[in-house]
Image (tube, rainbow, N blue to C red; front, side, top):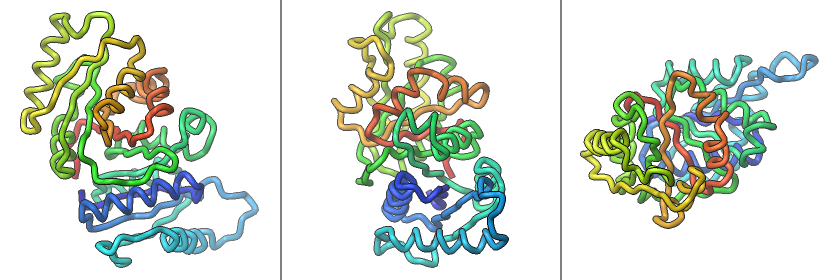
Length: 273
């Protein structure tokens, strides 16, 4: 991971995400960290020099963060424009070959009712690059274990195997795969084949696979697995077609994002840069 992008709105939640991103970038020895703010929602009677004022605010924000010694100020880029967050992020990803977008949320109510929550949804929907969602007040620590949560449906077409392998490999993390299925315990022909296929696709990581069948709710099952195995990062596939409806309009994913006190990465089916 060479380039991190941090879209911010200067809220406490975005400060948390920015600190997490800076610490993670330093840990992975990234080359560039980009701070970005969209002022598309500025007041209509605002002054003209909004871009320069916003850039100064971004620099001030960065100065308030704890910057690890392995990162130099020359590695920071500050960008601001009047585009929508989605448009701005898309342009930056294209121009700077962004490896990872990092944004923060406070929970379910934040997703639905705040600007940064809606922005996170829009960026996730666009699928332009992997998106890491940081819970409120979460502090970065070296990631030793990751889990990929799968429903074992359309595994060949949905599983972002290259992204998972690249990310887990760069993190040096132990990889787990979890499937929640209280009804059939993962024993239908389709799911048995799905398990075999996902393990084949992720073979370079030698992942541990487990079916959770003790709970009725998929989000609870994933969350319980995370706690039991001390998982540091949850990985989920971001499907292009209907992704917005399936992920953020589904009770499972909303509940997972609300419950999880570990970061969640939404990966598209394309290798991480």
